[in-house]
Length: 385
Image (tube, rainbow, N blue to C red):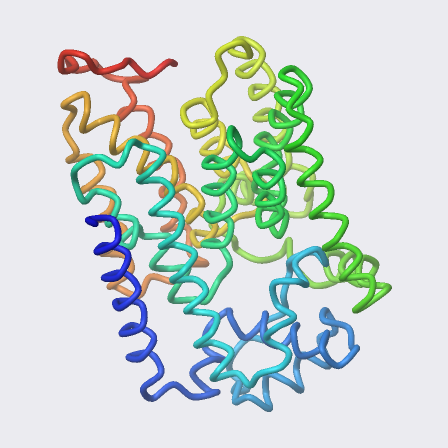
């Protein structure tokens, strides 16, 4: 009954939020969010056009109210993300953004519920902090897709033991930004081979094949168009607040391959980390650390992408509470991020470089991997390192 009551409260809360957002929402308001890139891509796909064509996107976005002093937004996700944006091709910007925000709200709610269940449904309300997680707030504000990545990881963690095939299909959501999961994906392949969990790999391959078939049906040259966008669209010229990007800018701004050094080293570490724990590997513990390192070392990432790290942050929060460790470090991190958000600090500035290392530091502290572990209460299990 308690779970049903919480579910009802959450649903009603979502409807209220969407109702508030609907008040005064216009096409012009939609153009002020990254959402407009997904809407314009969906419009192009629905009309048989190139979703990466800057000229067509320009006409659509300016027709929706984008002003001359606003930057044109083009979707940079690969064609396997077409299934996500295609429905936006059949609605206008205003109803589109309302449906999009509702989908984001539903995704974070399902994710929080799954993570709460995975952690044993503890008798506290820590899971509601997921709605106040800085990257989630920023993702919702921008209309970005990071929350869908969180849903994919949460479904995988929840289903990988009981429904491995569907756990694999859920990972299709992570494939819309594959560069964030390179070490994670490498270990997943090794794990499926060592433990013969081929149904997970089969589920992912089937979902990916279906997505690629849809993209080919909608736009046969989509992959070559996407490749052209990466080559000529200035993706690697943007001041992305990621450690890999700023490492390149400090060493040699024109040498793009430098951005891939951290993720290459992370892949090497991931293989060692898995192999030394392969017989006792736990995706709810070891996998969370792997996820944090994958996002930290990604060659290209934004604060909104860190929404996927809510799974690791909440896992650490529950472990810290069980072990009697102070939660002050997490409040400090959250408060610092909130101050930056309230101060309207732009996401393109280096002032958000600290967030991914901060989540990793919190997790290491919360799970006792660094610092002096506090004594556990009698009968509590020790989390394996």
